[in-house]
Length: 436
Image (cartoon, rainbow, N blue to C red; front, top):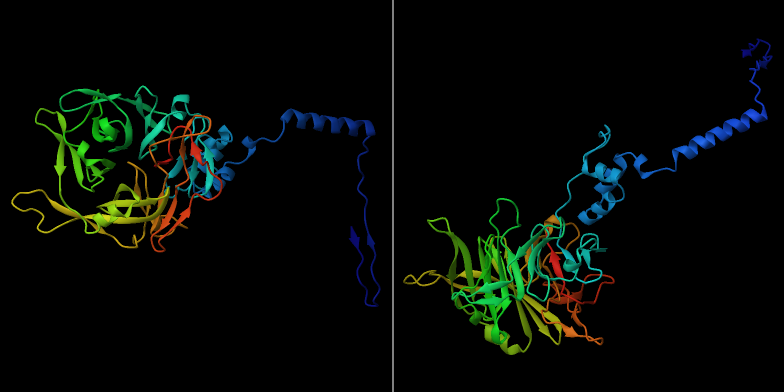
């Protein structure tokens, strides 16, 4: 291109363009090239999720706060699974490591023999529990432990097992217990708890409340490697309501609010047995008033900030009216003439000071609100965990999910929970918690 100069007389120069010769293409050649390009595109196949750079699924996962959502994302295909897990293809320079999940709240399990589900409090979403064995779907959960472990009643022949919902690992449990006279009895568990998540090198134990004759309850204990459960003397008189592992021992609480403990003791010959601990329980001042009120009371034990709490639900006409929280405290002097330690239940009041509680037989938990964004202080989540099923119109026994919700201690108010639609009954078990 040449540009003429602008002269002093104001004349404008001319712009001239040199044309570039273009190769001539015949219509036949153009059609052949287009057909070849189309064939190459067809051979390459449609776009695939495997073509997505690894930083895309990893970046998406970083925004997901619930472990279940991350698992569902990773299950879209094997390439995304490897990307989220950080294995396989080399990490691009711009790809940051997937951040750790925030602390997880317990998931709420709705048992059902056909389609069990669970609910995540963090995302407020329901998920189906897929790929469970048939006997696990039909089983009755009796208690939960950390790491996703459940104590399951598998069938009517008193078959029991520990089952991990995440890995599918199963540990059989003995079907009977023996009293101190070594008389065997069939096992019917009402509530159970674990001392620790089963793992290699961990000497875990299980404690349970079981049905006994004449409508009574009894305490039983099992240690890894034993072929039967052990039942100690004198526990039927307690009318046991809950059990929990706290401060290295199992705590049982009865309807009269007395507590008794059982902890492992190693003998000189290497054997391990359970040592019993009793307390001189001084009954709280308003106990008689509570009993005379006429409401049904359910008691739960919770370990919290190094202290043992007892939470009482007051149920009237099938609905929870109020919940109160007590702390086990010593009475001075703690010992009098080598007597039992003197303790009592002290009412905490209307605040949990930065805590929230999740109630369940054998699996209650206390969590710090500061670790979970968007959750309220002094809130208590409770389940419809009645052990007795009711007959339905088609002669099937069902468990109701109607009396479940959350209790606000500051407002003395109970609200329905969880939000949205959820199952209202089960054909095999009450709801329970999936602990992480």
